[in-house]
Length: 579
Image 1 (tube, helix red, strand yellow):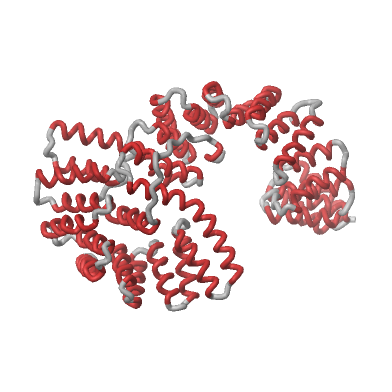
Image 2 (tube, rainbow, N blue to C red):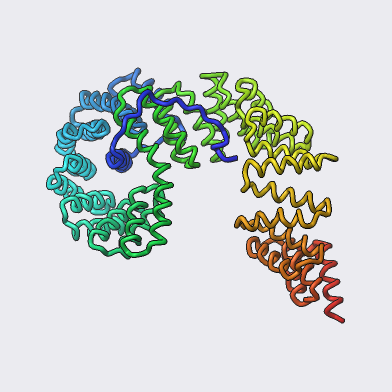
């Protein structure tokens, strides 16, 4: 099941404030690089942000002056992008122990998270005065200077960080960006190359190299750099656009057009996420911020990026432990990554907040369906329908279970109910046709329903294939042939279709040379199928080409040596060769 088939309830924020994509992207990258220096993971051993916060606060109730515990709490807030709460905790740490450089460092990060770059500079300087030997404090200072276009000071701060730790790729990368902004192209290229030497998997460095080479009209090098950047991170929208432009400038028009199409598709996915991130950055209402994070998670879920979806949902729940949509969404993401215990827990937490959330009942149904607990799956899918009769996915899943159990008549009824909900749902019609197909004396009804599927979606190839099988059974050669050819003429590369059409020609003793071609295509598409080699052997045998038949049957037997049909075919071929 694709996750987009399961309806996820989301709660949109009150307003959708915008923010420049470059600013949003920079902040995210800054926190990815800088917060990691705090040596804290996104979650600790699978413990949710909410549980971490509760654990730390319980310990602080016993002794509010435990600096290490308060630091862990503050870092957790940073990781879930709750910058105001993080700032409060870091300020408290500084009150308890004014000599904690990591307190000032974290406070600076909290300020940057709120775009208070000027204020962060003086705070970072305090951290440096306490611990001048720590390079991350210098790099953080450099980042704030760079955000304020104070590139000379940013350069100095980054260079000092590198003098302390020359082996940090991100320091070199960020210094390279500063050099590029100053027009120091050679120095910028040198720093990006150094960053890549240290950390080859650094797509941002390759992106910067692409831009720098492009400025010099070195299009081959620019293209190569952008390709590596996108291979390492396919979501780099700017790299995708710049690559299209580089192809265009280099005279590679076809590739430029293909890349521009890819860019537009990527942009259509990433732009809504960036707009939500911009709204999150500007919002000061914690519940609204939680809803925004939940919506970002839903966007990632829609595009099957389950890892990022889980991260965003975790942050949403951390910001608002009652964000029911986030529990539902993360439950689906856990399900699709086969983390079933976590998925069950998340969906049950959603139901604890809203027992009438049909999507959570359906989420549990999906878990039990995927783990072969069909009775439980039916139970929860039926609950989902009882709560929300217009929710079509549970109908389809119940039908699937009933069909797997060979209860075809019952499956037909549930699919008819789905069609009452949505008369244009092509999957409901197709599965209804299948259910008819598996029942005695309902062939014509199945055939008419497959035709309805094609009316709704002319590219629904499975329907053509099933129609072809029905026509074959009715000895309607031309109709069966046309059904299979329609799939092939649409450009679909389905080996079973080529093989079935080859068998049809072989059975009818028509167009045997074309049948050989189709059988060979099936083998090319699926070279490990013994059945397809057997088809080729049979057709060659009928053509009198016994040597090719022998070669094909020998391969079929190597893939399925105990198959009695293939053994008999081999015996007959050998008899012909012996004559």
